[in-house]
Amino acid sequence: SIGIGMKASLLTLQWAVLAERPSYNDLMTAFEDFNGPGNNLSTSEMMDLLNADCSEPTCLNTAKRDAVFEESFRELHRRSAEEWKNRFYIVFEGEEGQDAGGLLREWYVIISREIFNPNYVLFSPAADGVTYQPNPFSNINTNHLDYFKFVGRIIGKAVCDGQLMDAHFTRSFYKHLL
Image 1 (spheres, one colour):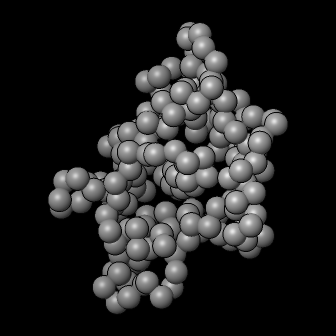
Image 2 (tube, one colour; image 1 turned 90 degrees about the horizontal axis):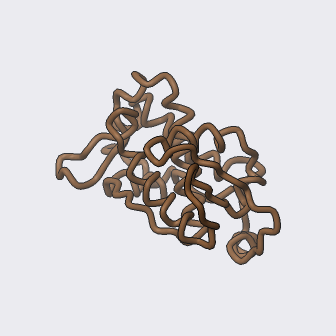
């Protein structure tokens, strides 16, 4: 569990219009799962988690590189919060190699690009064409709520693992997360 949540003080009148969109609320609820009852971590607990030597890595077998998002979702979306705290061990099907950090880093790069895949209808480009915001039509995708929760967990896991993600959200969206 990671403390990514929306602070009420940031929700001003100008953001209230955005909050009325069901898909936006669904995404924020998914992010708040990390900071929900029983999931709050103190600063010392967060540092312990970041410095932990995970003795039982969570193995993530990815069938194909071109299906990383779907395969990762299938493997991880039903895992408990405790299992998400473990180190992920990535294995790409048909490829030899042991994950000493490079495959995990590559997995984060691939999945961060797939998060913004227009076929999932989760995020849409903002007016600047560089940043992304929650797509108001995400409910077209029947799994959009589960996908938003999964994306929130992936971003939280990346923060805990100290991994960079190629994810550029709008400033207003970041304000809601903080």
